[in-house]
Length: 165
Image (tube, rainbow, N blue to C red; front, side, top):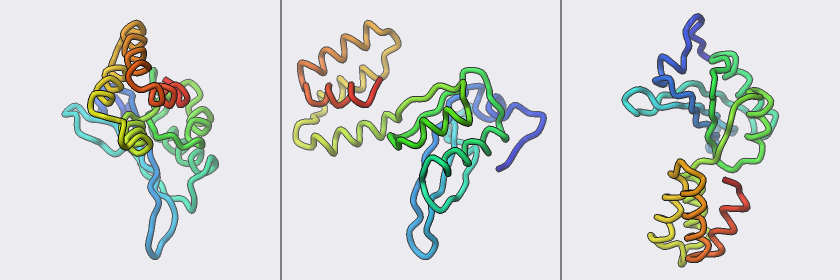
């Protein structure tokens, strides 16, 4: 891990937006394992890598190790938010390493899963309704979009409810 002692890394690099995307990718070939990565967006809205780590497998223990090391590097900024895919180990590990942080699911991964699970019926119109729901700022707008989704595609609606807001 790289640490910038004495500096608030997220404020300097990530333009004060304490939103970190984390993911793991499996190594294939001669060397097996998992590469963990944490990134944010800089002031130019470009992806800035904060940290990476390598482990033999992707599980709660390895995610906790990676996030604990990340915590050593960045501390615990106010309003910290983590975004990740649906790996069940990640929210548990985030809660251990960053107990006051919020976390949510990655829009890209959810949309990809919806397209895979509902290939023939997840049309552009349904995707647009889901996207509008995701990008709302008020609960009333979210509820309205979700009602539209319920009417247009009840199975997608149920899937989204099952994975959480």
